[in-house]
Image 1 (tube, rainbow, N blue to C red):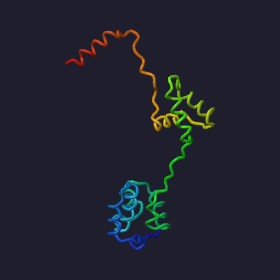
Image 2: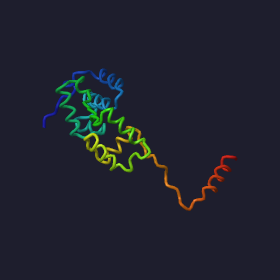
Image 3: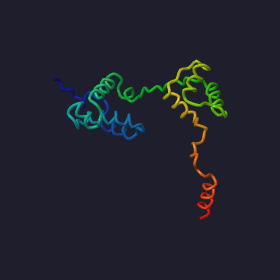
Image 4: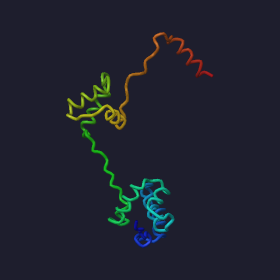
Amino acid sequence: MRKLDFPTLIKENVQTLEKRERQETTARLRLRVQFLRLLKTQSATSIKAVCLTIGITAKRGYEWWDLYKEKELDGFLQLHYKPRQVRLSSEQQAKLLKRSSENNGFASQREVIKYLRDEFAVSYTQPGVCLLFQRLKIKAKEPRPENKKADQEAQREYKKTLLAE
């Protein structure tokens, strides 16, 4: 197996990599620069050894090395994260918020799924509706159930004496 000469293959010098590592605010990108710096300084003898040192898989290390060879440092330090598209427009979200804030609102998340499918032709799963409600800050409007045997007058008296101390 042929050994690669990382100090000559990595074009940036160690000081530049150290400075760039300190400047990075994103932990993912800082880890990538650390990967290159360790290869450049020959702290470890191979990509696998560097991966063990920084705590990533060898497969990810080889992917990073190929990406660095292809795009150099600036291309290597770009994350290509694309967030998911929102399925409901702002008008549809406003309608959902209005409907959920009404007294009769929704009895269950299944009812919400059916409402979204019928009203907006958008399909959601139950966990998707849960995340949608978290994002829109929609909460259940009914209070917690009370014990049927509880004495309301005794509870009020207890609360009065509790706060009086």
